[in-house]
Length: 156
View (tube, rainbow, N blue to C red):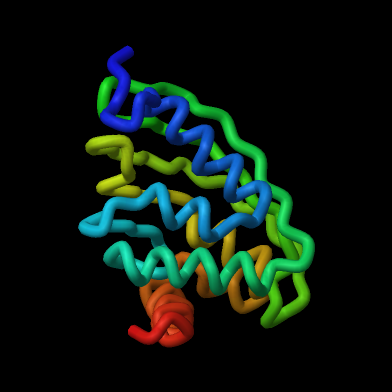
């Protein structure tokens, strides 16, 4: 596997990112994004590098019982695909959540330039929101409501 300009392979860079995540080190996570990086997930939607750095600072700053585990499933010369799990208490409802996510990270010159996280919004909503999530978590309406509130917290 080819090393990047940083001297690390995409697998090593992904491991560094998720180790920082597990340690709740938003600064180290943010430093791994290129200034022109893009991020996307089902809750926050598409974010630029500044917004994703702020999102991680906000989320990790609020986390009281976050537990993160991960496995790099595959890596190429420019990408890494990572299965990761976050267990935490959702602050708005006090409900426990175990979110299973697959992240795809694309690297250039030793930095993340594209980061896409995919997970079942319905599975997340059932846990985080209880009955409303169970009944409406599959609908674009509830996902839109949750996304709008999440994006508002980071100034979008």
